[in-house]
Image 1 (cartoon, rainbow, N blue to C red):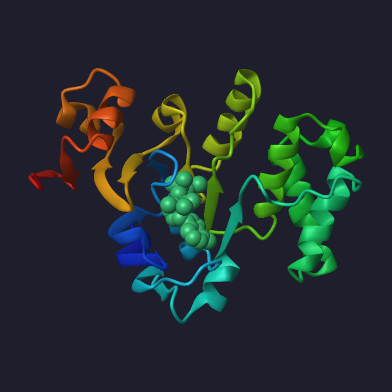
Image 2: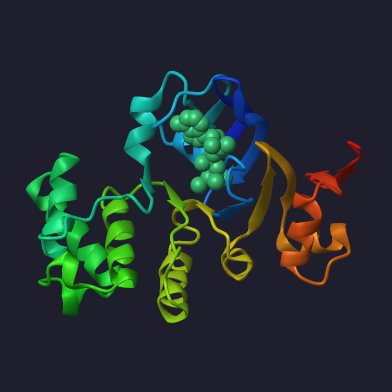
Length: 253
Ligand SMILES: Nc1ncnc2c1ncn2[C@@H]1O[C@H](COP(=O)(O)OP(=O)(O)O)[C@@H](O)[C@H]1O
Ligand SMILES: [Mg+2]
Protein backbone atom coordinates (compact mmCIF):
# COMPACT_ATOMS: atom_id res chain seq x y z
CA UNK A 1 0.00 0.00 0.00
CA UNK A 2 1.20 3.50 -0.79
CA UNK A 3 2.06 5.84 2.05
CA UNK A 4 -0.37 8.73 1.98
CA UNK A 5 1.64 10.77 4.46
CA UNK A 6 5.31 10.58 5.38
CA UNK A 7 6.36 13.07 8.05
CA UNK A 8 10.08 13.61 8.57
CA UNK A 9 11.43 15.55 11.53
CA UNK A 10 8.64 18.09 11.26
CA UNK A 11 9.08 21.03 13.59
CA UNK A 12 7.23 24.21 14.46
CA UNK A 13 8.40 26.95 16.73
CA UNK A 14 6.45 29.98 17.84
CA UNK A 15 9.18 32.22 19.18
CA UNK A 16 10.77 30.26 21.98
CA UNK A 17 7.89 27.81 22.16
CA UNK A 18 8.45 24.52 20.33
CA UNK A 19 4.91 23.44 19.44
CA UNK A 20 5.94 20.44 17.33
CA UNK A 21 9.29 18.86 18.05
CA UNK A 22 10.84 17.02 15.09
CA UNK A 23 8.10 14.44 14.67
CA UNK A 24 8.24 11.59 12.18
CA UNK A 25 5.26 9.48 11.21
CA UNK A 26 3.88 7.46 8.31
CA UNK A 27 0.24 6.99 7.42
CA UNK A 28 -1.05 4.28 5.08
CA UNK A 29 -3.37 5.25 2.26
CA UNK A 30 -7.03 4.76 3.16
CA UNK A 31 -6.42 4.41 6.88
CA UNK A 32 -7.61 6.50 9.79
CA UNK A 33 -5.08 7.77 12.28
CA UNK A 34 -6.01 9.50 15.52
CA UNK A 35 -3.76 12.06 17.13
CA UNK A 36 -4.28 12.02 20.88
CA UNK A 37 -2.81 14.45 23.36
CA UNK A 38 -3.76 16.88 26.08
CA UNK A 39 -4.50 20.50 25.14
CA UNK A 40 -1.36 22.18 23.86
CA UNK A 41 0.32 18.91 22.81
CA UNK A 42 0.74 20.12 19.22
CA UNK A 43 -2.05 18.28 17.39
CA UNK A 44 -3.64 21.28 15.69
CA UNK A 45 -0.27 22.76 14.76
CA UNK A 46 0.68 19.46 13.10
CA UNK A 47 -2.54 19.36 11.10
CA UNK A 48 -2.19 23.01 10.13
CA UNK A 49 1.28 22.38 8.74
CA UNK A 50 0.19 19.28 6.83
CA UNK A 51 -2.71 21.14 5.27
CA UNK A 52 -0.72 24.24 4.33
CA UNK A 53 -2.14 26.71 6.86
CA UNK A 54 1.14 27.04 8.71
CA UNK A 55 4.74 26.85 7.50
CA UNK A 56 7.09 24.41 9.22
CA UNK A 57 10.16 25.73 11.01
CA UNK A 58 12.05 22.53 10.24
CA UNK A 59 11.71 19.12 8.63
CA UNK A 60 9.21 18.24 5.94
CA UNK A 61 6.25 16.05 5.18
CA UNK A 62 5.29 14.33 1.97
CA UNK A 63 1.68 13.95 0.94
CA UNK A 64 1.58 11.27 -1.74
CA UNK A 65 5.19 12.16 -2.37
CA UNK A 66 4.68 15.93 -2.56
CA UNK A 67 6.56 18.16 -0.14
CA UNK A 68 4.59 20.51 2.11
CA UNK A 69 7.50 22.93 1.88
CA UNK A 70 7.42 23.54 -1.84
CA UNK A 71 4.60 21.60 -3.48
CA UNK A 72 1.67 22.85 -1.44
CA UNK A 73 -0.36 23.91 -4.47
CA UNK A 74 -0.53 20.33 -5.66
CA UNK A 75 -1.20 19.07 -2.14
CA UNK A 76 -4.12 21.46 -1.74
CA UNK A 77 -5.83 19.77 -4.68
CA UNK A 78 -5.85 16.43 -2.92
CA UNK A 79 -6.43 17.31 0.71
CA UNK A 80 -8.93 19.22 2.79
CA UNK A 81 -9.56 20.17 6.37
CA UNK A 82 -12.58 20.43 8.63
CA UNK A 83 -12.29 22.11 12.01
CA UNK A 84 -14.62 23.64 14.55
CA UNK A 85 -14.00 26.93 12.83
CA UNK A 86 -14.85 25.69 9.36
CA UNK A 87 -17.38 28.15 8.09
CA UNK A 88 -20.82 26.83 7.38
CA UNK A 89 -22.72 29.91 6.23
CA UNK A 90 -25.69 30.10 8.62
CA UNK A 91 -28.08 31.81 6.24
CA UNK A 92 -27.42 29.51 3.31
CA UNK A 93 -29.22 26.19 3.00
CA UNK A 94 -27.30 22.94 3.19
CA UNK A 95 -27.51 22.66 -0.58
CA UNK A 96 -26.30 26.22 -1.09
CA UNK A 97 -23.39 25.70 1.29
CA UNK A 98 -22.27 22.63 -0.65
CA UNK A 99 -22.70 24.34 -4.00
CA UNK A 100 -20.89 27.43 -2.81
CA UNK A 101 -17.90 25.38 -1.69
CA UNK A 102 -17.82 23.40 -4.94
CA UNK A 103 -17.91 26.60 -6.99
CA UNK A 104 -15.26 28.19 -4.81
CA UNK A 105 -12.94 25.34 -5.75
CA UNK A 106 -13.65 25.92 -9.41
CA UNK A 107 -15.56 22.74 -10.18
CA UNK A 108 -17.46 22.83 -13.47
CA UNK A 109 -21.27 23.03 -13.35
CA UNK A 110 -21.45 19.33 -14.11
CA UNK A 111 -18.91 18.43 -11.41
CA UNK A 112 -20.75 20.62 -8.91
CA UNK A 113 -23.96 18.70 -9.58
CA UNK A 114 -22.27 15.31 -9.32
CA UNK A 115 -20.30 16.07 -6.17
CA UNK A 116 -23.17 17.78 -4.39
CA UNK A 117 -25.46 14.82 -5.16
CA UNK A 118 -22.83 12.41 -3.88
CA UNK A 119 -22.37 14.27 -0.60
CA UNK A 120 -26.13 14.61 -0.09
CA UNK A 121 -26.48 10.87 -0.45
CA UNK A 122 -23.43 10.03 1.64
CA UNK A 123 -24.58 12.12 4.61
CA UNK A 124 -28.34 11.62 4.16
CA UNK A 125 -28.86 15.34 3.64
CA UNK A 126 -31.95 14.80 1.47
CA UNK A 127 -34.42 15.72 4.23
CA UNK A 128 -32.55 18.84 5.37
CA UNK A 129 -30.98 20.08 2.16
CA UNK A 130 -33.31 23.05 1.79
CA UNK A 131 -33.02 24.14 5.41
CA UNK A 132 -30.83 27.06 6.39
CA UNK A 133 -27.74 25.79 8.17
CA UNK A 134 -28.50 27.85 11.28
CA UNK A 135 -31.71 25.91 11.86
CA UNK A 136 -29.83 22.60 12.13
CA UNK A 137 -28.57 20.90 15.28
CA UNK A 138 -24.86 20.98 16.11
CA UNK A 139 -24.45 17.42 14.85
CA UNK A 140 -26.00 18.20 11.49
CA UNK A 141 -23.95 21.37 11.13
CA UNK A 142 -20.80 19.37 11.77
CA UNK A 143 -21.87 16.92 9.08
CA UNK A 144 -22.37 19.80 6.66
CA UNK A 145 -18.90 21.08 7.51
CA UNK A 146 -17.35 17.68 6.79
CA UNK A 147 -19.47 17.34 3.65
CA UNK A 148 -18.10 20.68 2.46
CA UNK A 149 -14.55 19.47 3.05
CA UNK A 150 -15.28 16.38 0.96
CA UNK A 151 -16.77 18.28 -1.97
CA UNK A 152 -13.52 18.20 -3.94
CA UNK A 153 -13.18 14.44 -3.36
CA UNK A 154 -9.90 14.83 -1.46
CA UNK A 155 -7.60 11.85 -0.95
CA UNK A 156 -6.74 13.14 2.50
CA UNK A 157 -9.08 14.63 5.07
CA UNK A 158 -7.98 16.31 8.30
CA UNK A 159 -10.58 16.43 11.05
CA UNK A 160 -9.62 18.51 14.07
CA UNK A 161 -11.84 17.45 16.97
CA UNK A 162 -14.76 16.67 14.68
CA UNK A 163 -17.14 15.61 17.44
CA UNK A 164 -16.24 18.12 20.14
CA UNK A 165 -19.33 19.18 22.04
CA UNK A 166 -21.73 16.86 20.24
CA UNK A 167 -24.16 14.72 22.18
CA UNK A 168 -23.62 10.98 22.27
CA UNK A 169 -26.07 10.15 19.51
CA UNK A 170 -24.81 12.87 17.18
CA UNK A 171 -21.27 11.68 17.80
CA UNK A 172 -22.15 8.08 16.94
CA UNK A 173 -23.91 9.25 13.83
CA UNK A 174 -20.79 11.13 12.75
CA UNK A 175 -18.65 8.07 13.45
CA UNK A 176 -20.71 6.17 10.91
CA UNK A 177 -20.07 8.85 8.32
CA UNK A 178 -16.36 8.90 9.05
CA UNK A 179 -16.17 5.10 9.01
CA UNK A 180 -17.85 4.98 5.63
CA UNK A 181 -14.88 6.89 4.20
CA UNK A 182 -12.40 4.28 5.38
CA UNK A 183 -10.41 2.77 2.54
CA UNK A 184 -11.34 5.63 0.22
CA UNK A 185 -10.02 8.67 2.03
CA UNK A 186 -6.99 8.82 4.32
CA UNK A 187 -8.11 10.53 7.52
CA UNK A 188 -6.10 12.23 10.23
CA UNK A 189 -8.29 13.10 13.16
CA UNK A 190 -7.71 14.59 16.57
CA UNK A 191 -9.93 13.80 19.49
CA UNK A 192 -10.11 13.83 23.26
CA UNK A 193 -12.55 10.94 23.23
CA UNK A 194 -10.75 7.65 23.72
CA UNK A 195 -13.79 5.70 22.67
CA UNK A 196 -13.79 7.56 19.40
CA UNK A 197 -10.13 6.82 18.71
CA UNK A 198 -10.75 3.20 19.63
CA UNK A 199 -13.77 2.91 17.41
CA UNK A 200 -12.44 4.65 14.34
CA UNK A 201 -8.70 4.42 14.07
CA UNK A 202 -6.37 1.91 12.51
CA UNK A 203 -3.55 3.63 14.28
CA UNK A 204 -3.15 6.00 17.22
CA UNK A 205 -0.33 8.47 17.78
CA UNK A 206 0.05 10.01 21.23
CA UNK A 207 1.54 13.50 21.30
CA UNK A 208 3.13 14.90 24.43
CA UNK A 209 4.74 18.34 24.45
CA UNK A 210 5.12 18.41 20.69
CA UNK A 211 6.56 14.92 20.41
CA UNK A 212 5.02 11.66 19.29
CA UNK A 213 5.59 9.44 22.27
CA UNK A 214 3.85 6.36 20.99
CA UNK A 215 2.35 5.15 17.77
CA UNK A 216 0.55 1.93 17.05
CA UNK A 217 -2.79 0.19 16.99
CA UNK A 218 -5.01 0.47 20.05
CA UNK A 219 -4.12 -3.13 20.92
CA UNK A 220 -0.39 -2.45 20.61
CA UNK A 221 -0.60 0.55 22.89
CA UNK A 222 -2.55 -1.42 25.47
CA UNK A 223 -0.08 -4.29 25.40
CA UNK A 224 2.86 -1.94 25.58
CA UNK A 225 1.60 -0.19 28.67
CA UNK A 226 0.01 -3.27 30.21
CA UNK A 227 -3.22 -1.28 30.31
CA UNK A 228 -6.73 -2.66 30.14
CA UNK A 229 -8.08 0.32 28.22
CA UNK A 230 -6.87 2.89 25.72
CA UNK A 231 -7.55 5.58 28.29
CA UNK A 232 -5.17 3.97 30.78
CA UNK A 233 -2.60 3.41 28.03
CA UNK A 234 -2.91 7.06 27.07
CA UNK A 235 -2.48 8.27 30.64
CA UNK A 236 0.57 6.11 31.07
CA UNK A 237 2.14 7.44 27.86
CA UNK A 238 1.07 11.05 28.44
CA UNK A 239 2.60 10.98 31.89
CA UNK A 240 5.86 10.14 30.21
CA UNK A 241 6.23 6.71 31.73
CA UNK A 242 7.08 5.11 28.46
CA UNK A 243 8.21 5.91 24.94
CA UNK A 244 7.31 3.70 22.05
CA UNK A 245 7.69 3.94 18.33
CA UNK A 246 6.78 1.47 15.60
CA UNK A 247 7.18 -2.04 16.92
CA UNK A 248 9.97 -1.53 19.33
CA UNK A 249 10.26 -0.11 22.77
CA UNK A 250 12.60 2.80 23.14
CA UNK A 251 13.86 3.77 26.51
CA UNK A 252 14.24 7.52 26.68
CA UNK A 253 14.35 7.91 30.40
N1 LIG B 1 -0.20 30.88 16.58
C1 LIG B 1 0.43 30.52 17.71
N2 LIG B 1 1.28 31.37 18.33
C2 LIG B 1 1.92 31.02 19.45
N3 LIG B 1 1.79 29.80 20.04
C3 LIG B 1 0.96 28.93 19.47
C4 LIG B 1 0.24 29.23 18.29
N4 LIG B 1 -0.50 28.15 17.95
C5 LIG B 1 -0.26 27.22 18.89
N5 LIG B 1 0.63 27.68 19.80
C6 LIG B 1 1.14 26.94 20.96
O1 LIG B 1 1.66 25.71 20.48
C7 LIG B 1 1.34 24.66 21.39
C8 LIG B 1 0.57 23.59 20.66
O2 LIG B 1 -0.71 24.06 20.36
P1 LIG B 1 -1.78 23.22 19.52
O3 LIG B 1 -1.12 22.66 18.33
O4 LIG B 1 -2.95 24.08 19.33
O5 LIG B 1 -2.12 22.03 20.54
P2 LIG B 1 -3.35 21.01 20.55
O6 LIG B 1 -4.08 21.13 19.27
O7 LIG B 1 -2.73 19.67 20.76
O8 LIG B 1 -4.19 21.41 21.74
C9 LIG B 1 0.59 25.30 22.54
O9 LIG B 1 1.50 25.58 23.57
C10 LIG B 1 0.04 26.56 21.94
O10 LIG B 1 -0.13 27.53 22.92
MG1 LIG C 1 -6.09 21.60 18.92
